[in-house]
Image (cartoon, rainbow, N blue to C red):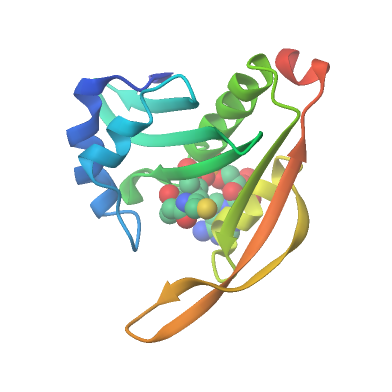
Length: 154
Ligand SMILES: CC(C)(COP(=O)(O)OP(=O)(O)OC[C@H]1O[C@@H](n2cnc3c(N)ncnc32)[C@H](O)[C@@H]1OP(=O)(O)O)[C@@H](O)C(=O)NCCC(=O)NCCS
């Protein structure tokens, strides 16, 4: 059974190895370790002690921001990304966050589909926000979800 729990320091090395297979710009062990502080809600998904995914939000400039989300490429389309995001949304709501925002690559249909399914609205576009290949840039879609008192019980 998959279960979701808070990020702990001993997860960080394995998460960096996992992210190498997930993200075009993988996080290092030190970057995951920075999210152990009180400014973040940081969650990992595990099955039989094997890390399958992670979701991290940070209280940044007075608003909550999704910093990273990833699921092992071998374990996708089983609902884990959605479960991680729902747990993250609840964690941020419990911390009193009024809104959760994120940027996502405009070409990332899988993530945009997931965020739309969870109720995130399109707020705008940040042109040429992400590096793409050697020289190019790619737009970011800015999305946001308003959190209410009822979010905690959903
Ligand atoms: C985005 C990501 C976390 C989704 O994880 P997942 O465990 O496969 O997601 P789920 O199984 O919970 O999917 C939930 C919904 O997301 C959408 N979705 C997920 N993968 C999709 C795909 N390949 N194509 C289209 N929609 C997709 C669907 O709406 C899906 O619901 P459905 O299965 O009922 O159709 C995963 O694809 C990933 O790690 N991608 C690389 C990292 C990344 O892009 N992170 C986000 C950065 S902003």
